[in-house]
Image (cartoon, rainbow, N blue to C red; front, side, top):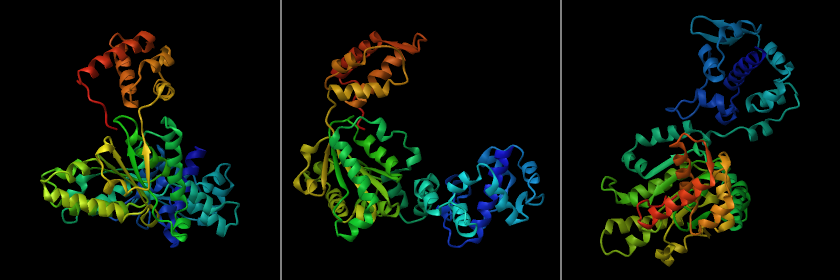
Length: 424
């Protein structure tokens, strides 16, 4: 009951202060409140925020919001409109600050921290609360607003076909669950620092940073690493597969490529991930499809003209076939990150991660030694097969023979090329 009163009061106070403080922006609203009241059409949270009984149920699973409101001396419930309103603002402010967990809520709520720091001289920091709060750019609501806006523009269907947009909350893979070598870890950390210190890099004129080329066989973690970087940096992930520009329904391909880069700039800061980059080489070496060649030239120019420092866009391209790229493609990137097939030590670490929640008695080191030439996705496929084979006999614990059998089955299928490798 006390926790429900605290949450109710926090919501009402947050709305009241946000409604009447012009200097507060939508990013100042706690992420859960911002997401709940987000208006996709407007692309923001409109003022005033009105608190209804159902909001408390939907936000905090409070089953009896009306009774909670009536139990607080500074709130009133209006039957007409089913709204909760403050009757004595100062009383609500003082009551909230005196609660045992009140100060902790304030420290994580930029709207309340701004008010209590300035008006109540409470030992809280608006700056610190803002750092703890997720910005709007990481939410699906903000992305959906942009998509809605784009969908009303001419030829919008084309650009939305080209790009798949994810937000950090939707990315399950995290960097700490990926097995990376030291060079890969160092490159990731460089980009984290580059985004963190963009203003400094701009000041010293170092703007040719943030164009990476990931190279390596299928299944070695190129796409997974790029997505995990999006989660680490808390920025949207925009994925483009270059082969999509051959789609007969895409119309003016060169224009669409330009629009993808403009979309990325509009999502700034973000990661723009271009897969199948070797498609450039296949197109440039052909005497046919002049329109596609123009599109590729547009792509290369767009890469030249985008910058992490200036535009907040980290560009990552990936290829399984680096040998197909010519110098015109290579020189667009300030760093090349190699994703080789994992050695035995890395294979053991990957297996340990994948099998960390699986019960049974097995020798992971032995399986790692048996799987020379396997990619990370190959190893995951082996574990998947072992688990499914065990489930066929209603068994939830794996034995060593399950894994050895799965390796044998994978080798047999792979030899006949029945099951192509995952290209992520």
